[in-house]
Length: 608
Image (cartoon, rainbow, N blue to C red):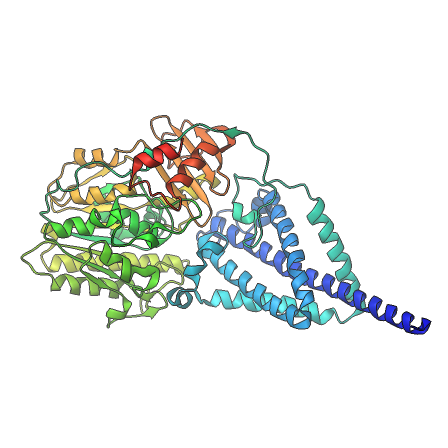
């Protein structure tokens, strides 16, 4: 080969490497700018949720940099570092695939980040990739394809477009190169450690492994699997005298009643039996429906929901609430606003003993529909219509699940009320619908022989308080019982959702306050969590000990002096450690081959 040919080939190779390098830097910068923009927007949304516009009228005014970013600076910095590592990883395939890779990659990541921002706004958590099956459900897609998502997507695309447009200029390309180098150095060198007293999602990326995990001591103390077991009491010793209507108000907490001035529900609580410390075990509707009906806790670690494992041979199917009542001669029905296919309720609810199931597809008359189904008042109309179909010769049990207070909120346009936010308006409408439901029952003469339970499946509500209180209070749900005895009192004992089944069975006849208090107080340990945030809370009531854990590694704060889980401000921090014994208990209970409620002895042995 001639020298000139060799020089030409080397020049081409050098030119090709230079172009590849330049393209790699450009793609890294693009991915990083979008990722960091998403990170800052997520932080602002979280600030808005916790302190300002979406849920509260701030008493301090809009001051995110003073009151929020200073407090969360290290968390956000770790998130920015994780973003830089993600951008570096993404830039490689974007570059290898050429121009198509760049634009397709940007479209995908902009849409993912837009969906994540919408998810953060309403769930205060990153998208959990293990729950993507829910996101592909047609009901979920129809329900969550919101204006917010479109705005976020267009905004992120616009930023990408502006960067690409101005990068035609050589000076801008040099600035982008300098930015990329500095960002890479920051990502590599910034010494940031995860803070477990701040939201973990603010410090992590859905598509990247966690970084910054601190070196912590291990606490290997044992935790008894039996604390997770259902009640051993007889499930046949109940009266079966009264009808039962179980109303789930989607996503509302005990805090919602006063926060949104839900006067009808609050009046029912004040004038009837009000359980003031009802604790839901887990987020996601299927988990709430599961625990309320079966007397068992859901899963807490990163595994599929127990709900999806239910089949005809599952032990829960023969001691669930509708099955037990059905065996006593009750007529049973489940009525919900959403399509029945979502979360496989059309398959699972009959397994629990429901004879009739009704979803949005069976509700022909509605004031308004959205992707999540019919509005709350129309749902209650359908519920009353189903009650009219029951034979008066036998008692009945009906459950009803709303969706109007699930984002995007479903309120008919002709409903007028003074509200500061869409969620506020939806809560007022739900309260109005409850009032109309009670009027409908009264008009039918059913109040004197029907137990009505007003509760919730889960909560996304923000409360005031410390960061720990805000997170723990998401599981603080309403539980109001309107009983034919016209009893009027409150019960302040912490009451776990897995005992709601037995509480309702007891209420099918005349029951004393002492009996209800006994059922509420049966558990020394109350366990609850947030699957979206990877959180778990473990309250040892006799020892006044409270654990706040991250379920990825079971790194937990242990607190002492906790006498009321509604007030977690002035409590003693005892230690921060990795609790391997607690992790072992939960992993064994929720493993692939063992289900503890099936054989508790096996799990007790496996956890040792």
